[in-house]
Structures are given as C-alpha cells and as structure tokens.
Length: 151
Image 1: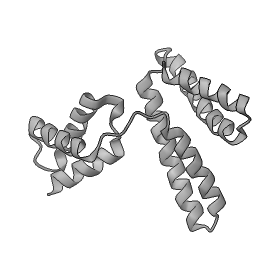
Image 2: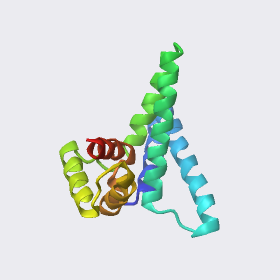
Image 3: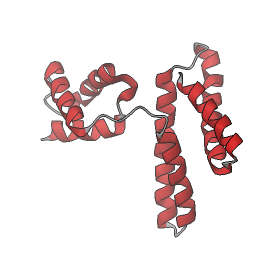
C-alpha cells in the first residue's frame, strides 16, 4: 500500500469514527501532499514516496519549532496541539535507524569517501542518502557526521 493510499484510508477511518482532531491533522497532511502534486505537475508529473517522506519530515521540523516557541511563550495548549500533529505525522514515516546502525554506517561512509575533515561532510551525507534513501533522517545523521568528522 502506498503512503498516499494509507493516509487517505486513515482519513476516511477517522471521519467515520468521528475523530475530529485526527481528521484535522490528517487533512493538514493531505493539503501538503496536494501542494507537492501541483508542484510536481510542472516537473515530472508524479510525486515519489521519497518526496512525500521528505515533506513529512519538514512538517515535523516546523511543528517542533512551533511547539518550542509556544512553550517559551507560555501557551502550553498550543504546544500540545503541535505535538499531537507531530505524533500523527510520525506514524507515516518509516522506522528510524537505531543509533548504533547509523553510527556504523557513518563510519563506513566516511572511510569509503576518504572523509577527514568537515569539508568532506557533503560527501559522507551523499553516501548515506544513497544507501538509505528516505529511511535516513538527515537532521539526525548530520549531527552524528559532524561529531565524527570534528573528532
């Protein structure tokens, strides 16, 4: 089942169950998917699973930043709403790589590309993206790559 199909099925299920909050959260995701489709029409005509996952990750990033700002601004109820949306979005992402697997993959990639300094970070990240594709969380991976190359 494609990710898009799963999202639409979950939307229908939530609507039938009367879960208005979940319906609103999933509609936010479908709105982003429609934006991707409109942008893709001009280029290739299709939206890939990798593009959908990338968009979902960017949605999580923006909502995490919003939740932090709401907490700092004394609006915990809005922060909780954002965190609920994050949980819904995360349900559609592939499982994250565990830390040990990611670190060993970074070591392998660094050796393979001959990375010795921070100047080589792009090469290591490219090797990781090629190996893991959409399963790689770039933000998490880049933090580990920085730590590895600056050590």
